[in-house]
Length: 338
Image 1 (cartoon, rainbow, N blue to C red):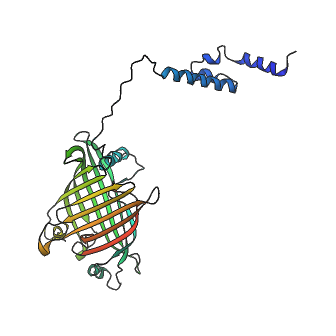
Image 2 (cartoon, rainbow, N blue to C red):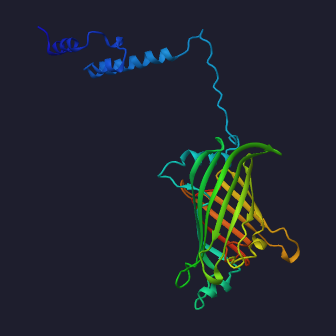
Image 3 (cartoon, rainbow, N blue to C red):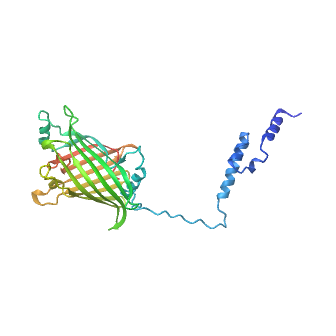
């Protein structure tokens, strides 16, 4: 008389499909097997057969090597690579694309505060030489593949703020608003060992939203070029101020302090980024005016970087365009330049 295990085995064999597990030709065939162990063995055998079929035979001709054409600046992996990454996520509605650096400096010290403009706004309150400074800067892609597959049209917005957070009423001492419209072009020209990875051309407006004697604003046509070599990037910009009527021009001498362009160098070392910005009006003697800004970011968490900024010169803000500033601050950066 058969024992119960033998009866169960016989019933199980009768319940199997008419072909053995090893003869299964698809996942659907294996799925028809009721026993867990046999069904798993069927899956394993099917996967093994497919893997063996995919392996090239010894006498087969070798596969042709697939060559991926590198895009402009691919070997530099800095500004050119960032531009391509930005374009890849530009149409994601849930992503804000960074433009310039986004940062917060909760503590900055200015050895030469502009008390004249402050007293005009707040005559009954002392200005603090320690204040906070932060910047928000984003952009959005309006049109890609402009003039071929290397051009992109962007709209950008940058807001820079100087906040007297440690004074009695904690007002915002100065806010600069900077909307702009610009074209970028990916490029691959070789110049003196550098690769010109990006060219740009755009319209830029900058103002401080003030009225009366404190109002400052100007409009520019701006052109730029980015040159890269290994971990070093050089960005050169030049601008032309669009003329205004004398009655509407609230800062006729802005070019005397901002000059006609700037030069920024960025150097990446491991996870640290160092940058220097130089600006000068290229005039001689006492009329020579300019500015230098030094920056350093270093990793402190997966999302944030520590940030140190030093500025010396004219034009840190529009209200300070004709005032010499000497400021150092420390805080956090959400996005790097590269």
